Each structure stands twice: as structure tokens, then as C-alpha cells.
Amino acid sequence: MLKEKLEQIDLSLWHAPKLKENIPHGDMPGDKIAIGEDHIRKAEKIFPLLIEEIWKTGSEKVVVSVFGGSGVGKSEIASLLTYYLQEAGIGAYVMSGDNYPYRIPMYNDAERLSVFRAAGLRGLVDEGLYDEKVKETLFRLWEEESDPDPAKVSDYPWLKTYQEKGRAALKGYLGTLREQNYPEVNGIIRDFKEGKDCILLKRMGRKEEERWYDPVDFSDTGVLIIEWTHGGNENIEGIDVPILLNSTPEETREHRRMRARDGKTDSAFTTMVLSIEQEELDDRGRYAKIRIAKSGELM
Image (cartoon, rainbow, N blue to C red; front, side, top):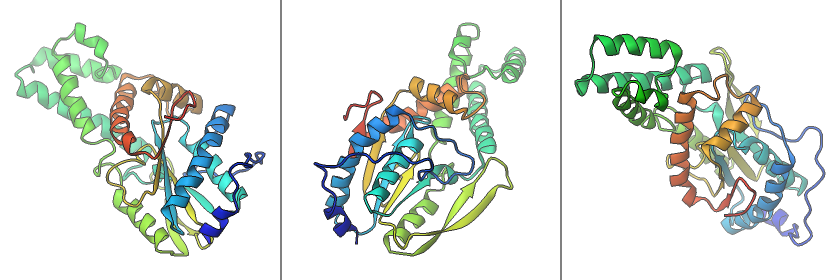
């Protein structure tokens, strides 16, 4: 029983166990984790607070969300927390929310860009700013992939309207029910809390044919940890302990570069995506029960 196992943990004497070579990690195919001293330091601060929050729920099945900006270290810290729980005798599993967009990464990135450009283009038409010269310039900017770059506005003042309209539409897509399959995630949380022993979990690679489901045995699992940029989203139901890893878009972009998360880490469009994600995090982060800054200080 989870409560009995929690009672056996003396937080005044607790020390992080020595890391093993292969600790539990998220279940997204091909995802890379690189645990460093910074991740360990943060996880060691979070763990005692996590135990206290799990205790407060009084439940035998607890769902924890580790969320924050893209590339902030969610995978690493969620893996460490899962490992610490398991070493303390508590069954835990870390699930990656990145398996639950409707589209594989390549197609979702393309959809994001399409949403931005379609709305920007329509905005120029609606504002009476579209003509043959603008059309030719846009074709060139699209080829250069520089149309989201704010620095270009000084050369093409009409681009300000294009970027504003496109950004507004992109904000209406990122992290919403149009992009992420929150109902499926909610179904998993519901099955877990109801004590279902075996749950089929989705796997999504980076190719269209890399989609499948694996059965996962939850019969001895008391804590489900979901690591996901959108893990604090209002459309998710049943999160007991939301944990925010705070950061800035600049910090998350640098971490993405280190993890080789994508090939266009420094692009103006990626910067825009991270900025919009940060707005969601700033809004939803106030509901987190545990918050930790990039510096490692508890907030």
C-alpha cells in the first residue's frame, strides 16, 4: 500500500541514492536524456516536497506532472524522481507527454508553420496591405524561412501585421486540443487511478509508421509521473502534484541545442514557439504545488 510505504520514509535521514547506469526514463522512442549535476541538485530539493505532497493526497494512486519550457530538463528530473521513488520502495513510472500530439514531430512542425503563415497572409489581405510586391517578397522570405524574424520589419513595415496575425493564430494552436490529444491522456490517468493493472500506452517516433501501443503493468505502481511541456495545461484532468521547472525561452533554447532536439533551434520561428509556450507556463505555473527556478532555488 502506498501510504504504508510513505510511512517508512524518514525525510530527515533521506539521502539521494547513488545513480545506476540505467535508471527509469520517459517512454518516448529515441528520446535522449543527459543527467547532470544541475538536474541531480534540483531533484534532491524536489523529492522531499514531493513525498509530502503525495502524502497529503491520501490516495493509493497519485499522478505527478513535471512541466516546464521545452528542453528545460523535464525528462532528466522526472527520471531522477522516478528512480528515487523506486529506491524508496514506491512503484513509479514516468510517461512522456510527447507521445500524445496528433501528429508526428515533422508534420506537427509543418502544421505550426502553416497555421502561422496562413493567418499572416490572410491578415495582410484583410488590412489591405497585400499586393504583387508583397507577394514576391513573401515568397522570398518563405524560402529563406525568415518571415517570422522581427528584425525584418524595419525593411518591410507590412511584415509587422503579418507576424502579429500569424502569432495570434499560432497561439490558438500550440498546446491546445487542436494539437494535443488531452482526452487520451485523461483516459490513461483515469484508468490508472481506478486501479487498472495493465494500460496500453502510446509510442510515437519521428516517422509516420512509428506509432504503436505497448502494454504497461501498473499493478505495483503507486505514482505515475507525466513529463511534458503541456503537463500543466487546463485540459488535463487528475493531476495531483503539478511541478513547474521554471526557465526563460533563451535558457530552454540553449538546452534544446545541447540535446540536438531539432535542427532549427535558433530560428526566429522556434523563438516564437518558445515564447508562446512560456506565456502558457507563466499562466499555468501559478497552479503548481512545487516550483523551482532555473538557478535551483525553490519558488
